[in-house]
Length: 264
Image 1 (cartoon, rainbow, N blue to C red):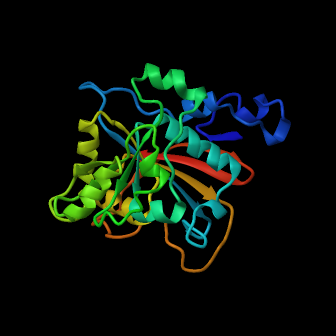
Image 2: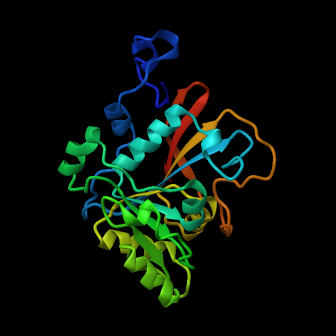
């Protein structure tokens, strides 16, 4: 892996024993490259980052899943981002399509998470209006920490009860049936989750962009072309003016670009 931006006097490529192709970065190096911002003057504020992958022609999925347009280095970064987060926020449709499982504890990050006051693994928080989820899945029956279900005040009581019977913690984050992204961020922060990560899908990310709550985008650009009618990384409502983000870093491996943008 090579660092393309920001530039340094000695590039990672020339420092690598593997020569022109570089070397595989350690988990500690990746964790340092993707570290969350430190506390502000008033203490740590919630920081919401998204992690998505897109092909050269803008597809966020192929045959309904992101795995075919990913690569081993992308999945390695995916794991590191989860290991740094307090909570992973994900839409219900993505849970269904991607076969979501609980985040797992990783020995390599145990000491760092304990020092940061974090649990053994990130909590999964599922955003859903209908609560039409399979509560017999491991995501609900065997997580290290109870899975959160973010929904609106108007959610069907029988579905709320089903989620709670399965061991999930239901968090109301909207006045109607749906979830208000800004309220969801506040609710998670009130539970002590300030390092937030969302993995989509596109509809949920689009809602977060429209609500102005996204602080950072970690975007993998896959050197593939898929054509077809796949979704972009963000969909749903448009914004009045485009949101401007600033490039913070860029890594490269095997033609894949691993970019990190922050809110301007």
